[in-house]
Length: 337
Ligand SMILES: Nc1nc2c(ncn2[C@@H]2O[C@H](COP(=O)(O)OP(=O)(O)OP(=O)(O)O)[C@@H](O)[C@H]2O)c(=O)[nH]1
Ligand SMILES: [Mg+2]
Ligand SMILES: [Zn+2]
Image (cartoon, rainbow, N blue to C red; front, side, top):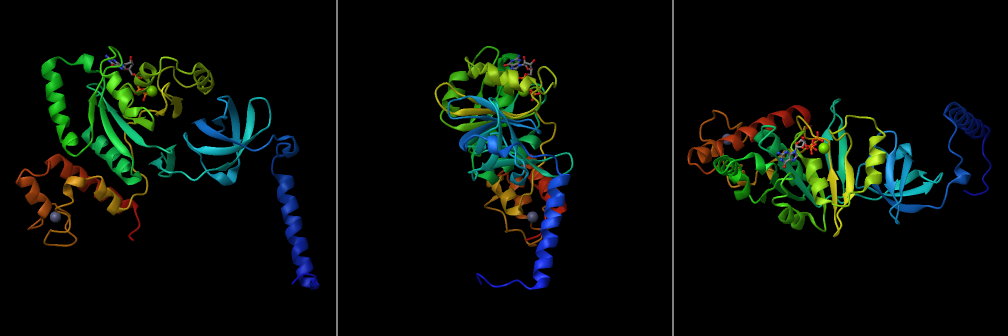
C-alpha cells in the first residue's frame, strides 16, 4: 500500500480527523510539559487520594503522581511505571498486570479497586463494635474469589474476661473449622502480636473490617518504626483525625507489606459469578446440585439437600442464611452466564 495516492475523499476525511483532534487538544487543559518528564522508572502505589497517587520509588522516596486517564482507577499495591515531573511529583504512565485485586462496590454501585497484588486478607473483628457474621461471610466470598489466603483476627481481647473470650471464640469456631486461621490479639496490651506478625511476614496482606475494630492500631503496633512521612502525606487529605480515609501500604521491618483500609459499615461485593459465591462457602460443596429441583432456592422446596444438611447439623443455619441472602443479591446485580 505504500506510496498509494490518496483519493480526494480520503484526503478530505483525514483533514477532518486532524481538525477534530486539534480542536480536542485545544479544548483540553494544557498537558504537563512532557519534554521535562524524567526517565521512566518503576514504583509502588502506596496510597490513592483520588486526585493523586502516592508512588514509592526504588529508593523508598515518595512522589505525588498524576495518573494518565487511560489507566483507569489504580489501587494501593499496584506496581507502576512513572516519570518525574518535579522533585516530588510525577506522572504514572503504565500499570503492571495485577496478580490479585480486591474490589468493592462504591456508593454508585460501581466496582472500585481496594488493593492490588495481595497474598492475604486479614478480616479484623473485635468485641466492639459488635461483630457481624454476615459481613465476615461477604469478606470470605471476596477472598475466595480472588484466591488469596484469608484469616480472622479477633482484636481487643483485653476487653474480654475469660468467659466472654471463650464464648466469642466458640461463636467463631465454625470459621476455624472451615480452614480459616483464627488469631487473637490486643494492640493495646500487645498480646498475640508475635503470632500475627509471623502470619503476615513476607506477604502483602490487607487488613479489612468494620470501622473501629483496630486495624490501624494493629498496624501501628506491628510497625515500631512506622513511616512518619506517609502519615504526613496522608494527613494532607484533611479527613478526621483517627478514622482511616484511604487505603495505605506500610512495609514490615522483616519483609512484607501491610495495607490499612478505611473501615466499612457494609462491604458490598463487586461483580461476582454465582460459581465464585460457592467458593466462599466450601462447606456447602458436597450438597450443591443435589436438591430435587435444579433451580432450588433452598427455602421451602421439598428435598432440599442444603436444608437437610442444616437439619442434620452438618451446616450452620446462619451460613445457609448468608448464602441465600448473597445469592439473592447476586441474582439482582449479575448478568446470567
Ligand atoms: N481496648 C482496646 N482498644 C483498642 C484496641 N485496638 C484499638 N483500640 C481502640 O479502638 C479504637 C479504634 O481503633 P482504630 O485502630 O482507629 O480502628 P480502625 O479499625 O483503624 O478504624 P477505621 O480506620 O475507622 O476503620 C481506638 O480508640 C483504639 O484506641 C485494643 O486492642 N484494645
Ligand atoms: Mg483505621
Ligand atoms: Zn435446595
